[in-house]
Length: 177
Length: 187
Image (cartoon, rainbow over all chains, first blue to last red):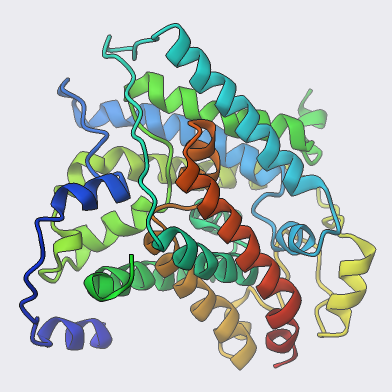
């Protein structure tokens, strides 16, 4: 917290930038998921339900295991390649079917997809994330599952990841994109 | 049936379930699968600090926080009710390498020589957990997504930037695991 406060009080330099708000949104897919339909808060419970199934699959397939990640990056096991490969294949066919048959959401809205734009961050940030992934054995999703699996010390990893995200936000305009 | 569920699941069953998350989220409410954005929502909600990147209505993205809450609950269910007491099977090559760093525990999914509170207060544990976590948070946001948003959602939607990002994740992981981690684990 002390560190954060120090950053907060640092003078913010006025940098004149073109209005990048639209860019920011497309780059980070923030607020692209807004629905025109208004929902009550408990409507979000359906996403919690999907998360539960997802979390069980994550844990039972040992995707959240540090050992499986080490094996993947040392080419000592096919397991993770199988999991990620199958997940991509199933998702790809699903996306194709949704587009092909113009499927609608349960609220009757057309399903929207959001194209991503290339920027250097995908390479630089991608490498940095790869380093962290091999160290902690976790992407952001498995972090939550590892805590649920009883490794409470991972809450520290999660807090550190949130700090990393914050520092990125703080430095964003100075970083190459 | 329950006995079968208690065994570790094969890669194709888990892979298919993870893949089905993409259409499930799209059809339930037009949500693009992606998890790392939660870390940003946490910043926006707790310490926005006048940073433009964190000035948005995070409550509109609350679904994502429910989703990761579900992941946490799912992991509790899997660990408490759907597990066997047997140690995790680890490739013999990895086991013998880890042994040279004094890591022998493979009873559970993570070795307690690194993932425990006593280990956190050693130099090795601090670097692995705190520095590692920082890199995960900084890197995913810089890359605009993680394994879920880029590798699964992005590639399945045939997005070239996501393929580039995924390739970078893998390159970074290979470099760390093979070239740098041996030095960190010796700390």
